Every structure is written in C-alpha cells, then in structure tokens.
Amino acid sequence: MKAKGPSPRWYVILMASLMGGGLLLIILNYMGLVPGGDTDNVYLLIGLGGIGTGFAMTLNYH
Image (tube, rainbow, N blue to C red; front, side, top):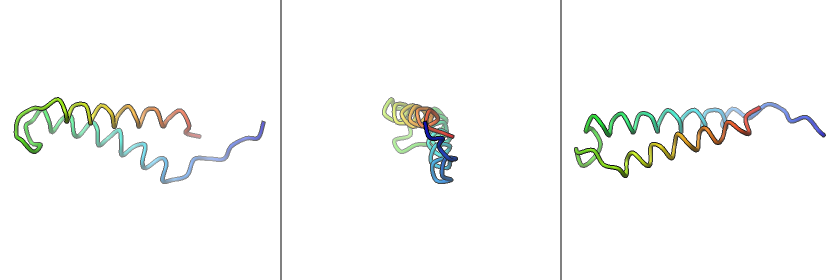
C-alpha cells in the first residue's frame, strides 16, 4: 500500500472553517444576532451540518 502525503493546506483551512463557522452560527443564533432576530432551528441545523462535515473531513486528514 502506497503511503499518502500530507493533506493540502486548503483542506485543513476548509475543515477548520466549517467547524468554527458552524459553532459561530449556533452561538449567534442563540444570541439572536442572525437575520430574523429570533432563534430558529434552520440556523441550528446549518451550524450542526457545518460542524459535522468538518469532523467528517478529519477522517481523511493526514
């Protein structure tokens, strides 16, 4: 089996941005600072999706 090289820089930046952006979106949602002003489950689901996608990307990180 051939060894894989390190992950490209864009992959690491995207992975961290998805997790950080998802967390930030959830925090802003509960503070009422997202469009609409009231807490909304749509923003919560988008934030959780970003965090989940970022964590799923860690499976291919080298």
